[in-house]
Amino acid sequence: MVSRVIPVDPFDLIIFGGTGDLARRKILPGLFRRFCSGQMPPNARIIGAARANLGQAGYQEMIRAAIAEFGAPTDVENAQLGAFLAQLNYVAIDIRGDGGWAELAAMVRKNLVNAYYFSVGPGLFGDIASRLNTWGIATPEARIVVEKPFGRDLESAKSLNAILSAQFDENQIYRIDHYLGKETVQNLMAVRFGNLLFEPLWNAQYIDHIQITVAEIVGVGGRGAYYDKSGAMRDMVQNHLMQLLCLIAMEPPSHFDPDAVRDEKLKVIRSLAKVEPHHVVRGQYDATATMPSYRDDAENPRSFTESYVAIKTHIENWRWAGVPFYLRTGKKLKARTSEIAIVFKKLPHSIFEKSSDEKQNVLSIQLQPNEGMTLDVTIKEPGPGGMRLIHVPLDMTFADALGEHSEDTPDAYERLIMDVIRGDQTLFMRGDEVEAAWKWTDPIINAWENRNDVPKIYDVGSVGPEDAMALIHRDGRRWREVK
Ligand code: NAD
Image 1 (cartoon, rainbow, N blue to C red):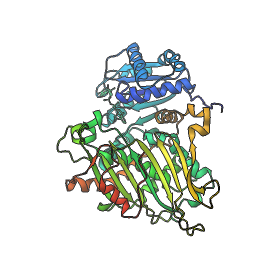
Image 2: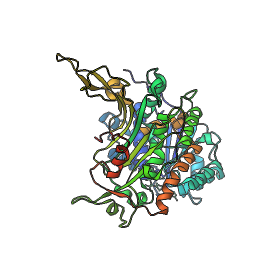
Image 3: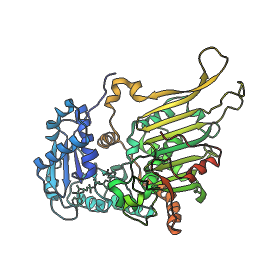
Image 4: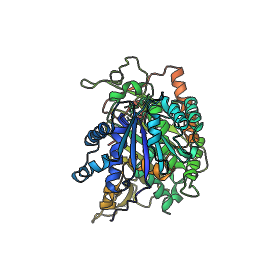
């Protein structure tokens, strides 16, 4: 299949925090891959803006090292590295003061697409936003990109929205949730709304329940201090898992356009039932003979922060009445996997012998490690021996189906940055969506904090705490295998 990379318009992308971990690990290696694919035009420019006193050459060297370390470039890509680095500039800037702003103002080419990536802590968003305007840098067409976490509760999210909207219109603000940049997530919309097959079955009449799992093998590693103030609910559920839930549950938008899609997602969040306390399980991983506990990793021996959470919820509307949504996410689990499973109801009547092992159809959407979809169907076991039924997956692993073309599949960050340059907000969270999500998670978190809730312990390498198993077993259902 022939690659269909279409170059974007020339741009100046300014990365505040251009020397930081995120910029070096994700943003610049991602941009380099887009450059190699031919999507980044030769007259586009990336301007790193950070505290360090680096010159242009020093910054280029830093990014050369970052791409070697985090980008895993091929030989063909390495041959293009010099040309890519030549498109990099740098300004040493003091975000809270005056240093560097005049230089930045002189450098930005306003007749091109301008995007400002706020790859810094949220405490600096207001300083950047107001200085971009005081120094006359940002035009009404400029775009700003902000990273998670977008607040730590409804109140702080509202104040961040207020800070940004004091200087920029909502159609200029791109709030990143990198889960939305994954190929499979977009494919979920293509599968639902591009095929006749699934949508008629996509409701309480045919769907028994839905499971969303994001399991990680890693612990909190070097992020312990940050994570300990956040926990799985704020770090994963409020953003990534809720965004996935929205895409599964939303009504078909009238068009594939940013506000039509986001309007439908918002309706889902607003229809989420209040979660009963016994429908939430929090967990924290314990030490083994060889592995440290969460409390060791977080360097907080009295921490009550959860590294695992499982929730059963419902959506209160006609389509989903009575269909449970089970969400779970955790660290230091048995395997790294992100999966959405749509489990269909049992057959109303089986014409086959009772002894046949009756299984439900499951549409499984995997986001990582390999992106793809499988549909479990029942067929006859081949060969003689009567009508014996077996269950096989119809496998739609994209790498196999798309052949060579899949090599061009950009990772989530690359795709989202290119969407910013194209001015497409579909895969970015709108301010009201973020606030609605906090409004749903706040009461759950507040209840834990008010009663000093102690998380249930689980073993490193397990599938989570026992109580999380009971949460679903009580309903006569099972979690999908974490593998
Ligand atoms: P970092 O601490 O590694 O980098 C911070 C950057 O900001 C540096 O370039 C620093 O020079 C610059 N900076 C800080 N204060 C400044 C000031 N007063 N003036 C000028 N420059 C200043 O942080 P990071 O890990 O890259 O994270 C950046 C943002 O992205 C944070 O909001 C974080 O929550 C978010 N984020 C990071 C990751 C990740 O993997 N690192 C993942 C998701 C979200």
